[in-house]
Image 1: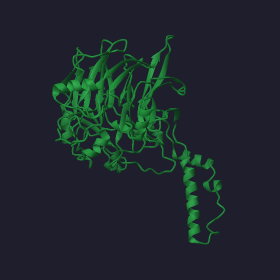
Image 2: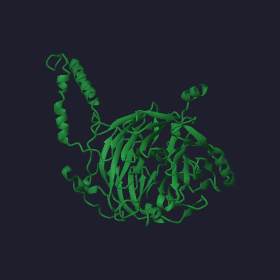
Image 3: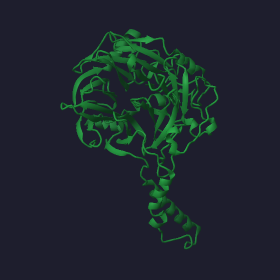
Length: 508
């Protein structure tokens, strides 16, 4: 049995329509039409013997794994995995596993053409680019390790990777990057003076006469070597383009047409300190156009609808959403989520006592040039949906809250069908992230279709995804521990400031 999917992605590349689903440290691809499993990619296989790695499943979990052949980097086009050599300067990492045997996938996105999938895992601070085959399989193309834990990810219209870390720095790097050969590393080392030449202590092993002094000398030499190694720069192509003085939570890249007919790209970033910054794109990302200031709590998610590129929707730890004209930093509209939730729960008899934390914002464009905005909140078994006027005003339809059977984890957009695939948390009771419930293994995902009146209708599709997820024989050791999975599914509320820091800000 599989665990719930903390991340979902629809990808139309190749001969199949593919649904990519992340469950802990594993990625699976499903045929969107039939729901059958196509392939599996896992962090657990990276350190396993080559014969034990499985990638393409051919719709059968117990089929023999396909053997991989490692090919010289000169034939990169034929290689199953061309890995960019990136290691921390110290050569050592102590990832925080959070109860897992491998890093969990925290971010998942794909290029516009669908040829490559980009993922982030927080514990090992790595960005990985996976190549998707025509059949829907995934093979690792590159791995890049950042100095700090990544916290946000997006791709620019030019397919540049923009990645932010928890210290507020934003890096730009090419999608495919450049492979660094071992030989080039040797050349780089030859150009630098040996550590012994950089640091020559007055004492040597021949001049000390006690075990105590010899031990001190060894510690001094070791400390100097560690300091030298820690100053080694990242060994891959990258640019530090901008920074916040707070934990960066989300990032978006937007391209606008100027009145002169030229296109200009902007970078929008949000952080834990209620800020939304509008910057120019590379190479002028240091230039700040303006700020969007109006939130009182952390801003966790920002989103720009495709049909209104001048409009920004933001949400986080506040009880409301804000709609912006981000070019001027002015608020166009405000939506009180708490009152709408209370109104919907009056009809169902449910009550929500925990603070609202927006965990996702998406949009689906219609043929008429408008669309629907979709909002998910942490530990909430439903979705807020509404439309936008041409002026960016919120239009509330017949039903703004779509009730679902379980808490929402993620949403994948199937734009050409005006549908969404919703990942559900079957491990916790609806409306809670703390209390376990009897697992309903028939509801891993649900498909919703946008109707002409703006409402969403549940479709009886992708039933095979739920069926195959139940029948798979792979079971992670953490599968039956909802406490461990709660930290994977629900992390937005951890951004809320508490204690003396929050009290001090309230007094200002």
